[in-house]
Image (cartoon, rainbow over the protein chains, first blue to last red):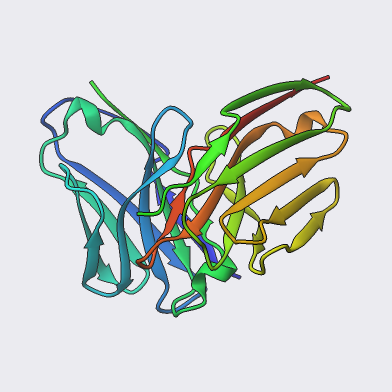
Length: 116
Length: 110
């Protein structure tokens, strides 16, 4: 069966420090991968998505970047965190191909990031 | 980006009551999905609706896709405390990724 792992669960970082959040998927090949951010228990804002190794699409200009060094690994990074980067970060995967939206997304358990 | 408006934003009801939450857009979607999210967890898919006018039932939850495929509703019969959570609708935008509404936060008290 497919599983998605996201870590760490919580993180407190000072302003100006770097960030690296990692997400890995098991049990599937060539998944579509996504990073979302959620503020204060509200809707999800799409940050990045990837349909293949080394391919990253950015939805929102910001202080963050993403990379996909391996087929089932997705990394969210920042060189210098801002207070506004605080939030709940969620990684998700879906089946690759045109019908992925019908099968839905499977989300990780999220990382609560607090920038102080 | 196609916007999805959800209403109400917050809903607090007592166990046993019925409720309906809505997801509306000015755009047509090929499909819409509903997710439920509990605090500190990622959203979990409840259902996907594809055909205009489609109705799907999941135990006490009834999902409907509007005839014009611009809106959807979720009706819960005899709500239970276990139904508490954030209900999110989502549709595919012009790209590859789902666009989510801001959600309806539901609290069901015993």
